[in-house]
Amino acid sequence: MPYRSLTLTRDWVAHRLREGGAREASEDDLPLFRHPEDHVPVPAAVLVPLVNREAGVTILLTQRTAHLHAHAGQISFPGGRVDPGDVDRIDTALRETLEETGLPRHRVEPLGFLPDYDIMTGFRVTPVVGWVEPPFPLAPDPFEVADIFEVPLAFILDPANHRRHSDQRDGRLRHYYSMPYGDRNIWGATAGMLHCLYRTLGRP
Image 1: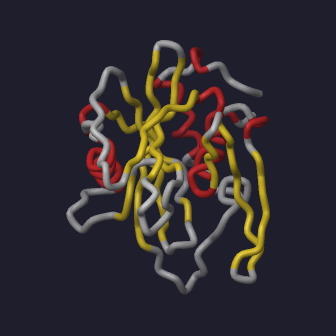
Image 2 (image 1 turned 90 degrees about the vertical axis):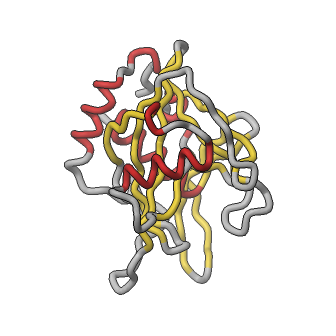
Image 3 (image 1 turned 60 degrees about the horizontal axis):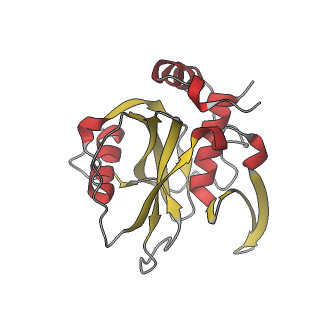
């Protein structure tokens, strides 16, 4: 069932994440890809920023610039690979978010994690869910980020907005989700992690 954004609180989201963290990720959570056992994935982390707007909780997303070598023009969470100096995955997610969007670290309260998400480019991504109280400054990196926008969390928690697709790539059948929102198409790993957030927060 869809949830109304206005009923969601920081403590409720944190509680659902703690409950969800105790379960194994299912095929519905991770429909795209799993690394083979003989592959050592590159560790990475992204921030899933939940913004506590007066009209309802939203999710902050970025659109990558068109000239980037990887995932050009796609919609994504702020984040990237783990650096040797990072203390943990939260540190990675907050550092990358500051670099990409200008959102200060102290404006984000980490609430928990979604299951790690493998992507075909060799990364294993840890999604860090954070709570953001407005107002906050943004200063997008013009090289990496073409736009920063927000999607109502209620839209993500409505299963009618989740579309599952299949196609062949490199001789392998793959599955992925998309969530068209207005004139934007959220798909691939970002949509997969949002689907996992939906299952964690809105599952029966």
